[in-house]
Amino acid sequence: MSSPKIVVDLYSDTITRPTAEMRRFMCDAEVGDEQQREDPTVNLLQDTVANLLGKEAALFLPSGTMCNQVAFAVHCRPGDEIILHELAHPYLYEAGGPSALIGAVLHPLPGARGRFTADQVRAALRPPVHYMNRSRVVSVEQTANIAGGACWPLAQLREVCEVADAAGLATHMDGARLLNAVVAMGIPARDMVASFDSVWLDLSKGLGAPVGAVLVGSRAFIEDAWRYKQRFGGSMRQAGMIAAAGLYALAHHVDRLADDHARARELAAGLAQIAGLSLDAGAVETNIVIFDVAGLGISAETFGERTLASHGVRFTVLGDTLARAVTHLDIRDDGIARALDAASAAARLR
Ligand SMILES: Cc1ncc(COP(=O)(O)O)c(C=O)c1O
Image (cartoon, rainbow, N blue to C red; front, side, top):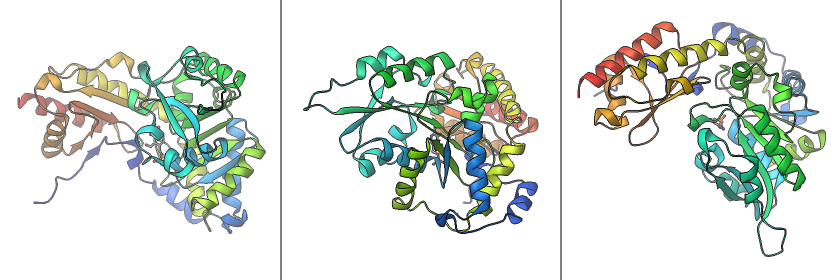
């Protein structure tokens, strides 16, 4: 039996496809040998992101996962500890990379909405004695994906960085959806990340490029990062073709993230009206909606199978009864209406 056709894909903002205009722009890109730092389009993308984020230098990498790994590799030696949230991507979804590739120890912290406090960081610091792990990095995720796209308030980011700085730790921001936070909070990107030593943003999520992420930091940090990029197999050749998609996205797809956020709020408000679904619709800040189907007496998997079979609407299964919807470039208003019809129909089947 063939699987049902996906008509509205709320699985993730990673599924966006390059638009016709983006594809044309990519085709016209000037290229060179990226590994030799001779690709003019990659170099322009790096300068553009370094400038946007107010840092000295930038490095184009194939994925956000590689940005996290490369940054941790620069900051840590084997046995060093990375303090991060217990729902953070490098802890849950990077195939054990920080431990396997870098030998780092992960120190996960709990906290509502994917955030932890400066006091929690202070309490998590290891005393500097020879028989303990060396606390080395504090890593935050802006926005916090599995916490429903929640944004860290600027003051909390600064407080956490102050504690880390005072203890001599490096500070890292996983900015897979940094520009969603920038648009939602109305805070310039460079102000949002000013207290961090390393930051990256993903081009292949809400921004709609097919591949790529850009890591930024000081010139010295990026020089070190180049060596790990090469070691992990991330150096490329005529990568200007894909870097062009990132340049196009930064020029044309940032402000429109506000549309994704509005659609996520509309979806959340509609889902909250369906008996048996529970969520805090007012808590939706960006493009991610997480809801619980427990009240329907079915699993999130069954719920997803029903919405897919009846309306071609795909959600993510996050847990036994937890489901997620992510709005993005390829979701329009009619997609939200269809998703709500699908969810109502799935709920009626109980
Ligand atoms: C918060 C977060 N960090 C990192 C990543 C990894 O990014 P990539 O898929 O580009 O490797 C993701 C991907 O979904 C993410 O959501």
